[in-house]
Length: 221
Picture 1 (cartoon, helix red, strand yellow):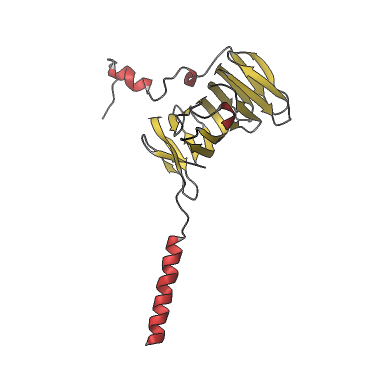
Picture 2 (cartoon, helix red, strand yellow; picture 1 turned 90 degrees about the vertical axis):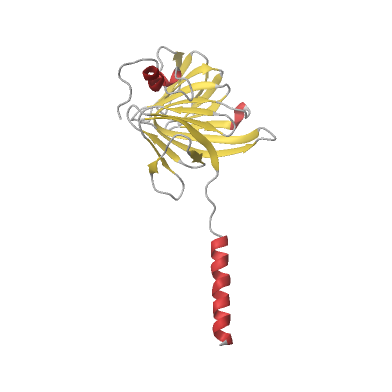
């Protein structure tokens, strides 16, 4: 009888230890502020599923938008991302100490378009990676495009971005300029055209505003 009780006690202790040592959920690092059409998130250790406005985003999550879609994300340090249509972005790393305004933010992008507006961290805290380039931030506001081949362009709206190709070539891209690479050299030229995310108001869905301002289209139920 005492032997059985000992076994039960040991089992209870073992179960308690297993539950208590289970891995914690990934850190919440920001929130979805706008979602146009549909968006998806794949969190670490989880299946791909839909994401909605006011949902939290977590470190190491993969975010995806659909054709004509858009997703606005605000990080805890007030960094802002506008993820354009048919884009795939991974939130690789986010470390932020609000008391010291220090940290580390790394984002990788395999396709699509992304507008990146830096937050409270120092400029050297941010890094953006694509299939053919790595970008360091020396400013506040820029747009990154990655085509189906992985070729990358960065158009700087304000500040400066350092762009380094996978081949090791590098260049500084200032406001009003666009840097481009397909993986070897980096070329810089004057910006001649920008995608819609470059003029989008963060956190505002202009399509809904147009309907609210009197368009006959409205929203069908």
